[in-house]
Length: 435
Image (cartoon, rainbow, N blue to C red; front, side, top):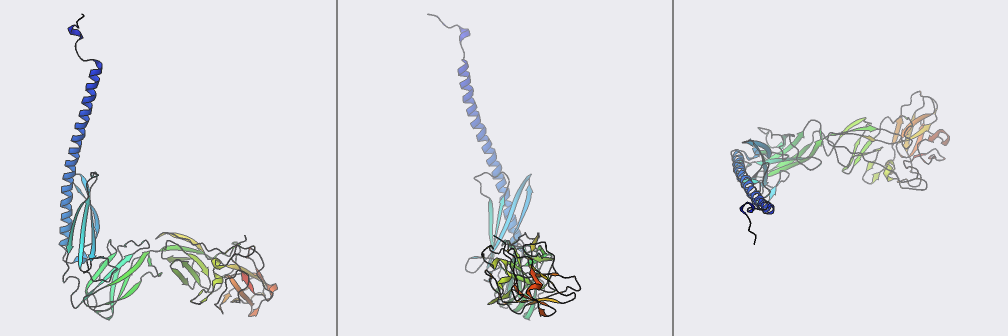
């Protein structure tokens, strides 16, 4: 039998590779475990720091003698090379234990303060550090002889608006406030307490802003009662600028004189805002749905003039349905919107006055008009004949020097299907496009 010599003894290559593999697996586990221990240690250290920051912010809140001076905020605090984000939120609590905002007229009972702290590199299983407190404002908000006013301001996105100036003035009874409320905070709220019973006017303002009623410095009236909290709520945002182009119907390129005076109506999903001028530019509340424009006296209630509105005309024959396209922009943004009208060509002696007066609606698909007696005049001076004049949509009687024009003296230039002149000279401006 052959025997292995001493120089043949030792590990084979396979045995060495297996040993290295086992060692690598063990080493990886040891490194991972060590790394986790280091991360957990660092996270625990960061968590302790975050707890101290939360407690510190709670102490700052509780140090306020007046709970109305406690506001929501967010700040970044660096500690030992790590940035901690400290977020404070507040909420008033009613006597029933429900969260209420400054837009509620329910009496304020407690102020709940929550502080939440986070930091970069938090472990996935680690929750943010939170601390809470409740402030009982006994005698600080109101007493048996006075009340409070809570003011809430939100934007078109229903989010709170900060930095809005608030002025409160007594209008009947009450007393002049010793100190006006501070501007709205991050929660869109501000308050006046120790207010004597009576009626007060609450006004807000901020340069370049406008409310949902198109008022730049809106006001509301509130009645303060002893021991109660009254709320004044506003929707207020940075105004949008709308440049208005008075176009002349489907043809679009016809120049025509505009009436000396007429209504311009800005329609949105919230309603209609009317100005009695022809503004080249206008500041409006930035409704996300935007605005479209209708020219003419639209009326109200049961007395309205749908003929003025292109979107009210239904499809008929060669004509499609009328269209009115809204244009939207963001708060502080700028947009251009068309104010369309039709054009009538009038052949008249030089220097004669030209007017149009609302007439009985004519034409299939015309939605009708119950607003009567509307007259528009034009300053055409000594212009050469024929004269082009812009006319709101619908049916009109044209007068030259106070006398009804004949069918041969008028011509509608902007109807896509042509025509629009009756035998008696009545003209109908039709906004519908051809199909």
